[in-house]
Image (tube, rainbow, N blue to C red; front, side, top):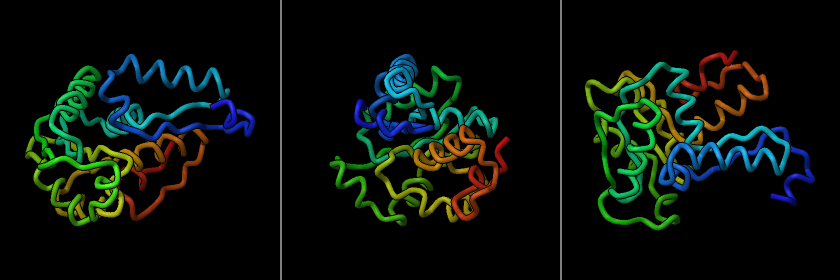
Length: 182
């Protein structure tokens, strides 16, 4: 972080969703505050960006999917519950994936996981993991489900663009990025 602060970035992104989801909202807020204090930059965390994106969409009931083991998904869902977000559907990845394995999932694998997680009462679907190729299937899954799909990377980009005052929509990567940002 000390080396990064020498570059004087406007925004620093902390891109590991599970690392903060598993430690709770207080840890996530503290981490963002520590990064800001050390770098002087505004800070976006993957977990915080998911919450921000869901708030922007007004979604309080979600379906949740990730390549994490069930215990980490349980902690992620508890994190979101503390933030007022109810998980009404979920899909756990069967088996255990390394970080390399998470990134090796194809967009079709991710889409299948998303479709398994969906629930009729879910207002949006969350695909949690910055190492998962979720953004490549967002538009297809949204078209199939008729609801927004929020990925960790997409949510971080949305909040970063908003933080930087860049309002132009980014087409092709889901409803969230296609919205103009105030």
